[in-house]
Length: 260
Image 1: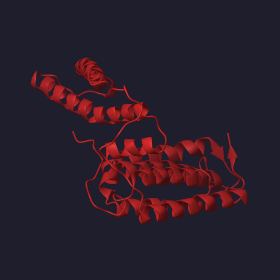
Image 2: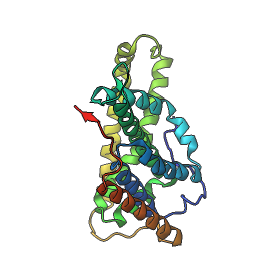
Image 3: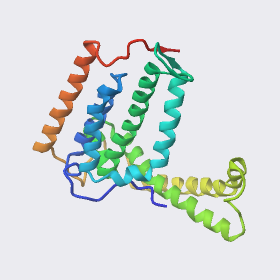
């Protein structure tokens, strides 16, 4: 079970400093939330997808295609239920509510893709060190790094235990969704026990090595900002400022839209 989204490559996006990629992710989020009209979201969507293409991370979008499809369908339906407009189209769909549903669905999908761009081009240790360089306390960064490393371990344990239970005759594939969930109980119990045991051993190992004895830390991984980093940060700043300016002018909204 491979749930690691990082792609080991040497693209322009991979070579950017981790802090730049984090700020790029935050800038995309800020720029997206200002607009209700999907037409104003399209330029930002182009930049996010361009980043994905330059990073060679389209394969990761394909890996989560079913999740994106479900979010698209549910988003288009749910936002139409909780909004209305002045221009009737069909059933409970109005032009204004349909545009708003499209923009909110685009926002949701683009934020996922933007986050996918970040983790596809940044190793866990680089990501955490970037957060620490941006002012995150070291202990918090270490906790995040440990959590990120534990996810593949837990997933591997689930796969191993599932195969062991199948070899003993446990049928995990038949029945409805509730029956399948009930059958996974014999798997979750050993997974939780194994995780708790590993966490306890990990904690004792940290204590034996004097974790937290010094406030100042040194890092094996060295990071530095280059010309491309400053250019990307400048472009991100301009996009955010342009979005704020358009919002101040009152652009990007949908006239006639009513939210419940």
